[in-house]
Image 1 (cartoon, one colour):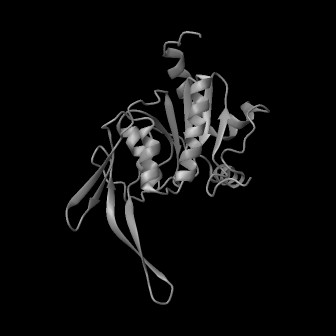
Image 2: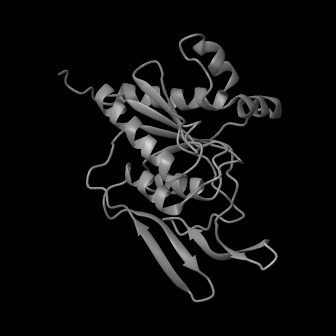
Length: 235
């Protein structure tokens, strides 16, 4: 069977030390559904920490993003507010999840992390649920509407802005990571070209971490976090 559209690069990887890595290439309902499948595996495996890779994630559907963010945020927690500047109206989006996945969490972000991916990252960062590692995100915090024209072309107009739970606007500024870890242009081009989740952890993890310094920093942070956390009782 062919994978659903948009899910081809969504991936789950098992790392050392009961840590896991999930690649989210975009925020569509197909990807989020697959993500929920990954989470079932993580719960059964009792992982101690998770890396979510949002690098070069261009966004997607806001409703799908809210569903994904709600996995990590308690009910009634603000995820994002959509602000309509002309009418001065706003629409808050709130988590409705009664049971959160309480894992130490690090998000990998870069200049290609945009729009709804920035909404997701901002919500978890603002609520102290995850730390961001990488470089400043794209700063695409506008809600766009498409209007078709008689000749078949389309006009794209910005109709609203995304506002984070800390009342910051993403547009034109982006998100600053908690830990800034730049990559060389050649390394970033190489990782993007082959696919961020294309690595085979079982073959040469040392080489992987030497190349992808952002992933290496994420694992360093999670290892420190999991080492200090109480161990769950064995079943």
